[in-house]
Image 1: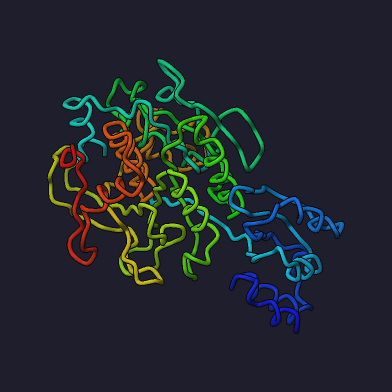
Image 2: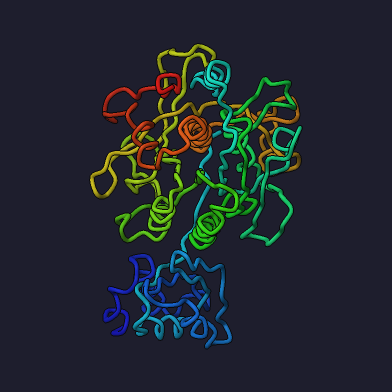
Amino acid sequence: MEWIQAYKHKMDLFLFQTLSSMLQCSHLNFPPTLAVLIKQQSSTDLKNLEDFCELNPLDKKGNDAPLLNFLCAKLSIQTIQLLLTHQEVEKIYLDREIHSFLDVASKSIGGAYARNIHGLSGKGVTIAILDTGVYPHLDFTAPTNRILDFVDFIEGKSTPYDDNGHGTHVAGCVAGNGLASKGKFTGMAPESQLIGVKVLDKKGNGYLSSVIAGINYCIENKQRFNIRIINLSLGTDSLVSYNDDPLAQAAEKAFAEGIIVIVAAGESGPGCIITSPATHPKVITVGAVADRKMELIGEELAYVYTSYSQAIEGLIKPDVFFPGLCITAPIPPHSILHDQLEPFIVDKNYMSLSGSSIATGLCSGTVALLLEAYPFYPPEKIKFLISQFQKDITSKPHHFKINELL
């Protein structure tokens, strides 16, 4: 136990508590290894530590994020103890679980106005959807395939798929062209391009390491695919400052590289803790609201169910509210959501879902329209434009409408 106290400063709170419990309660049945994220000093090479992650037969390397200085692995306690003494290790984090956000539209935000009056459709803008995957739905693949790439950090597959359905629905809110519904269910930016990054499994769960690896991929391929936006309709408990949160740090790095990061606030309700990485001041944090009638632009909002509160640092979040109740968008056949939520299926190819995940997709599509209109605006400028609609979180949420910016 002495070594745990001695190196407490090089562990996050979750790893420190877990190791302490394992050593104090050795009679309990703990796993032989722990999944961790190893952050290396920025001036060193991750390869210097790779050999240390294979010292024990139980050790196994995972997804790395070299641009973010993170090495991922499942390690024995003995290997973790050794790494804590290494001078090139800045900190070691427990690889915690990540979850998609979901409860059981475009027109009310001004999507039709942007298309019909200003001719905006998101053309030339690429959005990376870090989620359960993206199914090659007709609304993405016809008349041309707008899924530019697909990378899978869960199963390692190269062909686009979505065994859960959450990611496809979010992608439809962003970029569905409504072809399978004759234009009825059209997303915000129907000519924008998509990158599917599968970081969550079929149950909608993942780990810090998979999401961080996904963000690393986006930074690495930013120029290749013109990735301007990362959509994160997911999150995890936020019990520490964003300055000591590896997922929030990864989001900050993407922002610094010129990528706008848009994150769901979560579904806990007013006054509850905002999840990570939505706590970071540089990301656009999106809350969900519902209107009485979606088809009436300007109708007063009737319902708020998303998380909104102060983050640990006192920062007020979300930054903006978008519709998130009963939004209809594409769904993969035979996915978990398709099979388990059959009453919400619409016209076989679509599903009606609710949550801040959905609101986040609509926000990402809206940002794609703004980037098409103002392609040289940096992330800071776009965040300012979006956030100005919600200056006081304690007052009644203001409904975002893009026509007020164009």
